[in-house]
Picture 1 (spheres, rainbow, N blue to C red):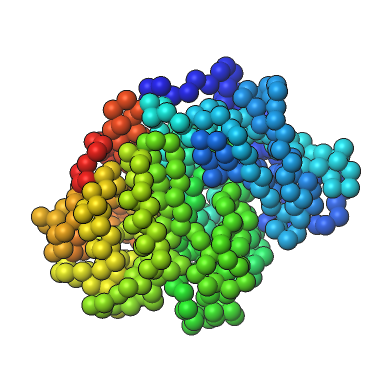
Picture 2: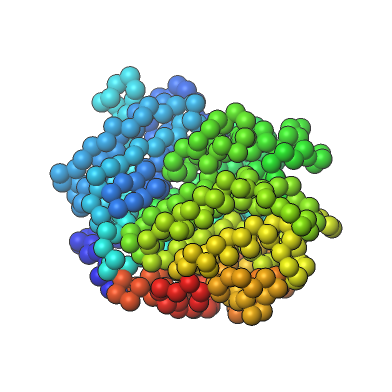
Length: 530
């Protein structure tokens, strides 16, 4: 991409080869996944690595986890020598947050490389500090000409496929890291709290898949500590920790952070759960989610799941890009045959829909990515009669949750909102769909694209059927021919979006682990529909 910020030598790669490898390779706590003891000998350690999120042109949020109570200190600099470093005094972290903490950084230079290191200090003796943990990231650009490039995918540790040391763990993260994106959009199912792992699984061809095991991954998550253990599990993988130390994240959730296909108000009949109220489970998961990812704290209480917990938000990434991070889980109505003729709640809820319409209309970014945790025109069933996503297989006029999406698409057309495209994961394959009114039963909208990519570390599944209400045409698809194909049998998938700083053209690339680019689509700026 032209005009990308120059990274002075030795730059990021030396950080990755050198100092970053120390915390990435550090030994994790002996009882992997266990909560730290409150009284330990030695100095505080941050063996779980570092993360950065909420990156803007001038600010960011740095995350760390300690092995005991500690004071979080962050230093930032323009070079990896840390000459003229700025120091940021973070919080005292302890058991109330599962020993995780974040420190906000402000006044950063736009469009520049920022090097940082996190040091943990003994609260009783600030001179007793652990080894610093290093990371680096780029702030969002202030100039259009700098361009933007990011990756997206989702679905991690699902269907019984966890961290397999025999194949090098989550190898796809290392492949993504080498692409050096500006940020990573994780499109939900960041963990599978409802998917216990087994120590080993025999594949159809006789090979044996081996999982790294922890206590929390041996059963479905119900308690706060069990949810915390699920979010902690993926950090056991060295590829994930290296990736996190280099690539900022934009994270959303879907169902498996709590329980498969959940909706607010649901009472479970699953015998694996002693806690049947899904709202209580969702509140516990939401708390752990915000402890383990560098995202701004939600509005509202963790104690009950009342809809005040804000997962949806806008991420501004310079003049070229706004990302509208949806929450299609927390505000939806119950799963049903989805054929009601009147539906004001839908899959977003009325308040989130108003926010999205207002935010799209106010956006001055050239491109407006709608980050959805579920697809629009792909039929995702929930049992024999109910449906999980927007579509329900009826190709006629909008019904059920489709009514809300029709209202949104009509708004985008009539308000002449340009440069929209939809990105999602969830269905465990990769595809590209173009929606067009000439093929649709509902015609009052401008054409748009939806791109699907995933999983990152989960089972692969065959392609879902299309619903004709909004006229999707599946231009490309790559999917297994049977359900729950392991990562040893089928590649994992992720997508890449690149916006050129000169022409503002947006290029989408659908990628396969180890297989390069499968599909490419170039979109031109300034259009209501493509």
